Every structure is written in C-alpha cells, then in structure tokens.
Picture 1 (cartoon, one colour):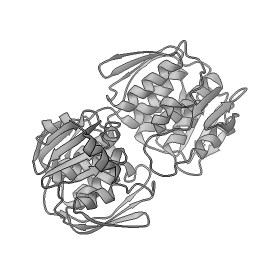
Picture 2 (spheres, one colour):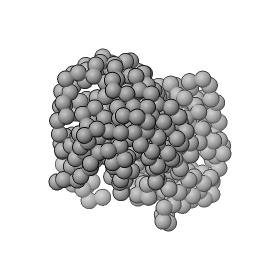
Picture 3 (tube, one colour):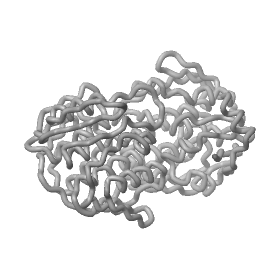
Picture 4 (tube, one colour):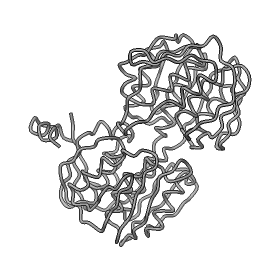
Amino acid sequence: MEKLLIEGGHELNGTVRVSGAKNSAVALLPATILAESEVTIEGLPDISDIQILKELLEDIGGTVSQTGEDLTIDSTNMIDMPLPNGKVKKLRASYYFMGAMLGRFKKAVIGLPGGCNLGPRPIDQHIKGFEALGAKVTNEQGAVYLRADELVGAKIYLDVVSVGATINIMLAAVRAKGKTIIENAAKEPEIIDVATLLNSMGANIKGVGTDVIRIEGTDDLKGCKHTIIPDRIEAGTYTIMAAAKGGEVIIDNVIPTHLESLTAKLREMGVEIEAEDERLIVRGNRPFNSCDIKTLVYPGFPTDLQQPLTTLLTQAEGTSVVTDTIYSARFKHIDELRRMNATIKIEGSSAIITGPSQLEGAKVKASDLRAGAALVAAGLLADGITEIVGLEHIERGYHDITKKLTDLGAVVWKEAMTEEDQKFYQNI
C-alpha cells in the first residue's frame, strides 16, 4: 500500500487537463450491454473504477479492447451471467448492470453495490422503476434478483430526485415495449451523456436535462462511437485547488456551464475566474470572503464538491456554513481537517467553519473519494508535510493526480507504507 505526501506552500501555475467524467463513464460502460455489436467510448479516465467495470463486462462474455483513453466493447456474445459478489462490491455504480442486463436479457442477478461509505443510499427508487416496467425484484442472500417475462413502458414518478435511478430506469426502458415516462427525473450532465450514447445506438429518448424524460422502446440497438463529456467534479476540484494556491492556473477541457454553481461561489469568495469556450482561468486572490453553501441536485451546488470547498473555506475571513442536503454522512473529512488545525464544528447536517486558519501538515486518512480530494487541497495549503493514506479512494476518481499537481508546481509524491504507518493509521 502507498501513501501520498504533500509539501505545502508551493504556488500552482500552468495548465491542467481534465479527464473524462467518472460519473458518466460508470454508466456508459454498462449501457454498452444493450447494443449487440461494437461500441467505442472515447476519452475515458484511467481510474480504478473503469478497470473494474471492464473486467465485469468481460466476465459476462464481452470482448473489451483498449487503445489509450478509448475502450471498444463487443457485447455480441454476452450472457446473463449472475454477478452476485466479488467485483460488484467494489463500486456503487455496479448497480447500472441491473438496468442494462434487465433491458437486454429480461433478467439479472447483481450483488448489492459497494463504493464509498457515505451512509444510507437506498436503491428503492431503482427497484420501483423496474417493477413499474414489469420486473419482479427480490433480495436473496445479499443479491438483487430481477426477472421479467417482458418489459412494458410505464409512467414512473421518482419520489426522490436520483441520478442513479433516472439512468437505471432509462437503461431498462430503452428496450421495453411502448412508452416510458420518468417524472421528477434528475437533470445532471452525466444523464444527458448517457442518453446521447443510447440515442446514437438507436434509442428514442427525449426530454433529458428536464424533469420529464420520455422513452419510446425499441427492439434493436446497434454499435456506435461516443466521446465522453469532461469530468465536472475533477474540473471543480482543480479549480478549488487553483483558488487555494494558484498564481494563474488554466483548467482545460471543461464545459463551463457545468460548473456555474461552483464558480459563482468562488467569485463570491473573491476568486478571479475567467470562463472561455472549453477552459477556465483561475487566479487565487486573498483574503477570501466567507460564504454559505448548500448542496442541491443539479444545477445546484454538487455534493461531490462540498468537501474540497470546505477546505478552501478554512482560509476565508469569518464564519462559513456548509450544509449537505444530499448525504448527511459526508463530513468524515472534518476530523482530519481539525487534525490539521482547522476550526470546524458539526451541527446536524451542517459544518460551521471559522477562519482563516493556518493549516499544519499532519498524518491524515481519506475515508472516501471526495474526502481524499479535500485532504489533498489541505496539504497544498498547509505548513510542512502532509501524509495521506487511503490513496485507493482518491485514485477511484482522479486520474494521475500526483503528476497533474506536480506539473502545476506542487511538491507531491508517493511512498510505500511501512508497518509502523499501518499500525498508526489503524488507530485513527
């Protein structure tokens, strides 16, 4: 196992190129099951989640070849093989195999998904949608069994706006008979990306990006080529890091409209940001103003950027309040920031941050992907050296983060963990 070390205090300058969107990729790859021929996805991020999904596609009979950032999946010989445990436990997005396999084979057996531990994130809305389409869904020995004689279009109202449920129902419905209407659908750019792929494959999906999606089912979907959108969360994370320690940093391969909720808040804090066609130019200005953040479904402020922004708010003058309305357990980074001399307290689903605080290098532990990003940002700001373990969480969502930061002027490197390290981190 490795740990990440960061020597804080170095100014960031230069250009960082954003990779393809993780949250799109983990749905796009299962979606290829629905086309009974070759699909090529271009611009995929080189992260561990993609490798797990690639192996899962191969496990059910897919032929997968990779050229750089492009993956070609031939699903011709795929079978409805059960995936009750093993790799599906490693990432939450494995639940997209439910919708895709149900759509193609009318049955699936998928283990309950894993991924970051962010508290209860039920899949009841997914199941509600599958049942409305005519599937029988049971939970047997820790796996979800889905069976249908046929899938028939239906009107489905989501009780909670859910990206996962919206995509999963869409995957199942594109090969159902008749029309499906998803009401109170999520609007995230990643959903539009998946629908674009499905429509290129021959699906008939309209209304994506609004709260009502209409799908006319079709029997046959064909192969195609599709280029993934840029990762707005990776882009937002580097934008926050550039604000924290930047001279002038260019965030390249960005769709600026996807980041408007973040850039508006950063400008409120006093950060100078220029938006161009496919890039942002960020200049960190101090002192920062305090501000309040509330996470909301898109186009509101994304929960995935709440943790990195919390780090930046430790540098703001006065008191800031961050409220997470999406995942109440998404404050596991707070104890680690306190270990680094941040002044933060938790009240219910809010973090109250008093600043500015001079962060100090410390030994800290990433409990999940975005908590890890928050700690990397803290390490860039801190006096001295910060050691971060739980690197496997960070690498689930940030391709080559060490090199990207080094190229900007940060002093970041990896080292193997010693036995002494492992004993220390077991106790924190």
